[in-house]
Image 1 (tube, rainbow, N blue to C red):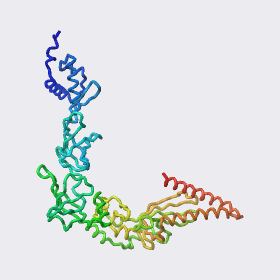
Image 2: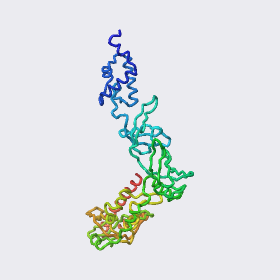
Image 3: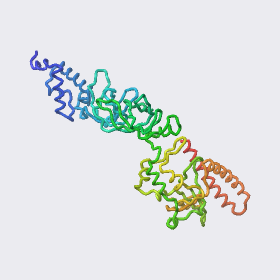
Image 4: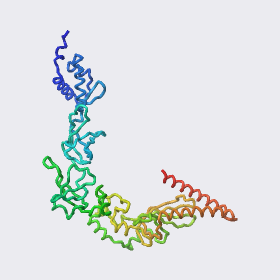
Length: 436
């Protein structure tokens, strides 16, 4: 009765588990079926086979092996040590997003090494407890996401700490008095970390790099928000100094190298409260029923050379930032609000696209050129909208009047009908874009 099966009956869970681990470790990348496993380990009794299946389920739960099908497993090639991005939560339910997965892994605060949101970490998957979710433990912080933080300075006797509005710091940032840079209790400040937590010290040590001002002041709070999100709130001194050295003079050589549009009607169209006007439109009638329309952009490249301190700062900023009560410009104020602002009655250098249109507004030719322009008028969006509505009414009135003309009526009637049709098409497109 027991012949051929006596060896299997004596194996316990403690004895069988290492055999299964050795089998999978010896076959990395290979999918092993239950049949292969039973045959290789000589598991020839039903109880022993069921014990092996139970052990493999636990091994899969601990991520040592991975289930491939209902009756096969494979060694987990990802390993127990991986890398990923840490995410800190105010409720302590921190997580790590592994590099090769979109499923976050829970990290208890005691296993976080006080990592902060965005930090790249190396972590180890922990043996999963029964009826518990998968957990990880940070074993190294490879790269810090940021080393500066924004908040309010708070003094308690001789101790100064930074109170962060984000409230996602693992522990307080302590600032020695000699590193306050003149900051006082209640001031908002930007603080750089000079010492990170370790096994012996849980708090971060910082130094004030900029005092923003008293908390509660509107300008201070706006700059605090910008600094909190890593956005620029002021220009470096060397960039401002470089901008002040740029001459606004247009030289005879500049005039000679550019097409002259100073006598062509030109206007800008911007919001009512705009301070910089960087684009403009021009129009004039040519012979043979052609119209010339110019689209002009302030020629910043004439003043800002590639690789200069102004250019590098502009690349870093990428764009101007528009807030509720202010604009954070990509270029220093001397450039964006003065030299490169296409203000009325001032001669400016521009980079332009010039279109030739027929009477039906079809593009017949175009060219891209450097120009000198002089804006005649600054329009606000509301003014232009009113003009367009008045023009539509005037077109309708002229269309009715054309019925009373004798000579030239067919031509005028045809032109007005075509223009009227284009006006309706533009209006419909504008309404569609506005509501889509």
